[in-house]
Length: 158
Image (cartoon, rainbow, N blue to C red; front, top):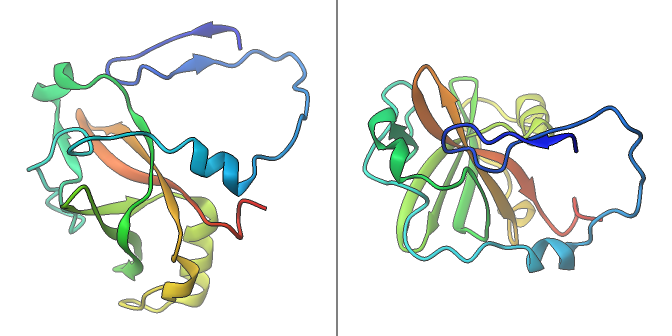
C-alpha cells in the first residue's frame, strides 16, 4: 500500500500502489468467522431511513458524520432475508435486537438474484443459514448509507 488516506468517517481508506501483489492463500470460513467485529449496540447511528429505497436504519445524515469512527464491519446477522424489490437487491436482518433493511452491492449476489429471482422473490433460506455480512458505510450525495458490500457463507469462503 502506498499510503493511509482516511476521508471523513472512512478511516480504513488506503491508497494502493502499483507494485506486484503476492498471493498467499484464500481466507477460510474459520478465518472469516474469526474476523467478526465485536459490535455492541447499533450499526453506527440508527433512526434514519432512506426515502426512495425502502430502507430501514440504512441512512446517516451528514450532520452526524462527526460521531462516526469507521465505515466497515463484519457481522453475523440474525434472521437474514435477501430479496429482489423493484430491480434492487435488499437484505433485511436483525442485529443486536435492531432491524435493518439495506441495499446489497455484492456483485456475486446481485448477479445471482437478478438472474434467478423475479420481483418480490427471496433467496432460499438454506443459502443464508450461516451467512456473514460485510457492512460498508458509503457516501452518496452528502449522505452516508449502510450497504451490504459482501455476503460470505461457508460455501463462498472455500
